[in-house]
Length: 276
Image 1 (cartoon, rainbow, N blue to C red):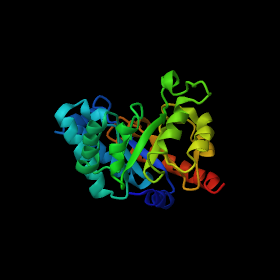
Image 2: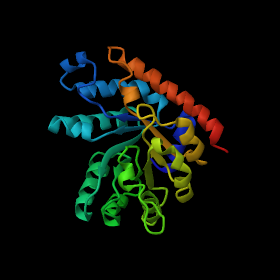
Image 3: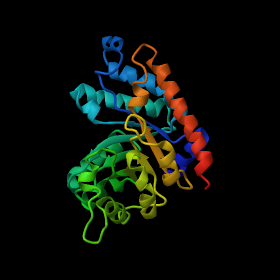
């Protein structure tokens, strides 16, 4: 799915919601544990319930790796289910990979050739040659970590060099030489909403993947006010608030209502900010 097609889905659904499939075996309803693959059963129910209200899904690979071989199979089955049943959804593998060129090439081959996801999150710390192999796939997207929503972001990302340029600004500026906004996206956390104006001065046209709404306390209105561009340019992720909206047998309906509520808020934001 290219940038224009993603924007078309945003316009069609009046939503820029990304549902994070960070599914924890210890948090799903207990009655599901009787199934051979309880995470997959849970994921399917969540996907079926939320698909009308979101434009993207983001399985966090760590939650599947934690279960070993069975977890990888669950991850593969989940991605295949989305692609088969909801081919209009943008699929992000939240893997945060980074390594030297030949290793990065193998990661890219797995996610883009074997899994056939649309995008993968990548760390920029090792520089251009660790990111380039992911960019050899022109129909896919690299989502580069730029300014994250965790407390530790202040340890490195906000530090300044002798010229006063912060590290996240350097990442944004230099990485634009590697690929255009058609292929490169950035992670910018909602808890850093006051810095979205600074981000947009450097990358005005790129899509931003925005975690931190909901459980982490980020403001959707502030993110949209300072981060939305004329193609929306935002994929706002919600994970825990949707996945664990209810712990009973009614969990899917609760997830549906939470996703619907966010979609309605996003529709208002699109009207308020998209053409401003």
